[in-house]
Length: 57
Image (cartoon, rainbow, N blue to C red; front, side, top):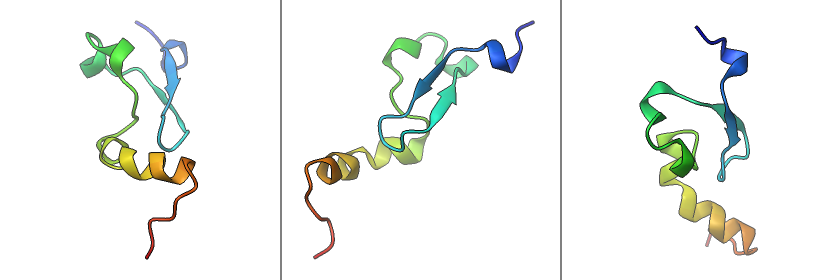
């Protein structure tokens, strides 16, 4: 059995926080970019922030 510390990790492209491998991602781990559904939904907001645009009007 593996320890949690031994599992692979990635950094979320939206929030920048590290997240670890989950069993449900076993088949698609190379394609996983976001740590959560919330970050996946908010991915477009992050890309506009990086360009220096302001969402508030």
